[in-house]
Length: 225
Image (cartoon, rainbow, N blue to C red):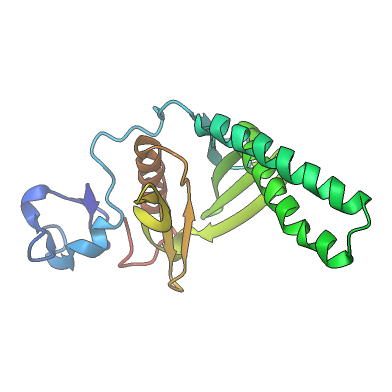
């Protein structure tokens, strides 16, 4: 579904042409660029109250509507195996170097290996206990990612969001690029999240954010979803 940026009425399929990049609103009598409107298209039949398994809808408790999703993946067990293997080797070597009569440069040489170990442990903790929470309030999208109350917080004004989509990012695994939910703001900056989510969950988040943008009364003319 795409909507006119002026009157906010839905533009039916017979009134837009993808090949010519034109969408015509009969109510306003105006043509619009289909590509701009499609950046905020909400899939027909989208039900925000029926999220896929692993995503939980949060009721509005005074802090705004929201959803919670976790980063758990079965690859965490492979990561645990490598973490134990890595920690065993580097830990033994580090203890031997630091308790012996090794020179200082040898002791400092072991520090990067310990930082990698910390990275392994942090990744495992995020996959097992971490969560992300999205909140829609006061015309803005707020996001928290972390464990408990410790984590990173981000905020985007809905009126500043110019594009929401699932796009490839600059990370690969087995020669295949990862995809993530991408938010492009008015200043041209791109933010990514949800890299570890499957395609169904990513698309649900995209549709949900697009729907909230369309319903946001503060949105500027020409950028309505």
